Length: 319
Ligand SMILES: [Zn+2]
Image 1 (tube, protein in one colour):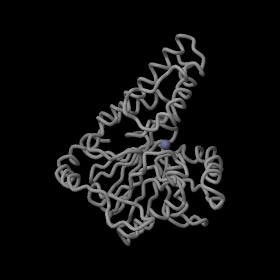
Image 2: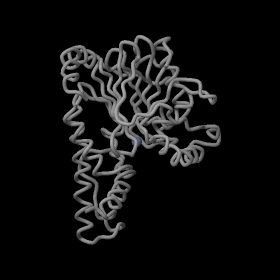
Image 3: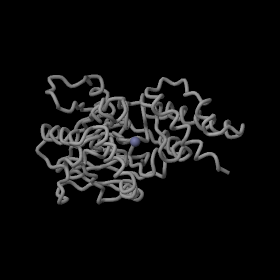
């Protein structure tokens, strides 16, 4: 992010944000099956997913989803872990505005963020422009069939018509899109959480959607490159926005601090695995003997051993 732009956003938007923040309460009067939304800045709505695994217990509703409304049209940021969640998100947009959705932006390839795409784009391709990192199509091509198999296995055979909707507008470094008097600045990152991470800044409100480049509460998941993620985390800390939306966990006005908490987990993981390699431990010894960091992360049982395994494979042959 351009520091000068950020300065302007800060001056113009902080008071309004603080006021909205103070009155920010969970949705009430919500009908069954409706997606809960919070307006975290004027025209910026977020659905906060459960801190849980993508599976039948959570209904696949674990990723944070965003809606940004301009004068001309709407952008949706990630679409949820099933087509039904995508449908609920689409219905939520309809309740907010009659404007069309012109951009569907995916922050990365993981199923909890992309499987709702099909609710917005019909099989003939009619619908909003789907936007992603330039490596997202390849990631979805390789992983997509496994995600669909897991969906049918875990959620049941009625998911057999689910499809992967890849992006058609690709971001190689950065790209600005206009929703009508409202610009979104998209940034494609080097390999970090995954190899296709994209962030989205709403310039008007200073709201930065980081996708899974930032986890809060939910244990961070290494599926790209640990050292790359640490580098991106350090850069993001210097460019913190007034309001940050992680891929999992609550939005925050303290983005830099949230990134620092995540950095501590990733640095501890890196140090522990390097020490294990130096001591000549095997992978299984390292997994057994590398306890999770003492930070108050949820879902450590589900993800920490997997992170140790990914870090071991990455760091084993480092210079
Ligand atoms: Zn992810």
